[in-house]
Image (tube, rainbow, N blue to C red; front, top):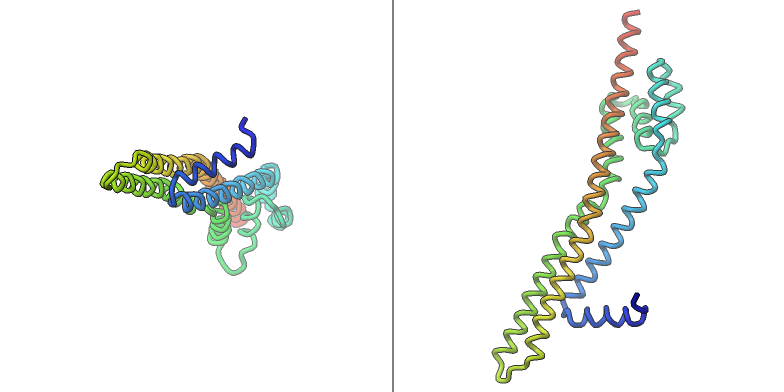
Length: 214
């Protein structure tokens, strides 16, 4: 493992040799790290709030016709699935279906936060690297066209192009993996919310049908 001072000097040297395009690349990389860490923390916290046992208890209360009990059990729930059930059962100004859809939409919006930004980072990183490649190659050709052929300037331009390209691709590759993982988790949460909304509608419709027959 490289000692910290050597590693810091190495990174500074890489940034310097990568040319001026490395500064926006570093800014994009720092932004990417922040949003990935924030999303990881958010999903870990969500995992600790999930309570499948409480969901089943609420279903059982609704199946037994104890709607008031289900409302009380789901009150102040941290699990988003239970939270949308509670919101749906308290819908004095709208229909049950609309209340469930609104609550589920809010949960999905929170779960999908920063995914668009991550997608932008995945696209922007290689483009910045490509821009660094172009400016580096341009610098090399300018050196070749000069009165004296400076080998250091030619190789320096090529090195700048390669470093910028590698940095841009590195950002995209690093962010692409967690972004796809977050998309998968979002799809799973959306499925759970849709299943919960459907179950609540069916349970309440079944009880209403039984009461009408009685």
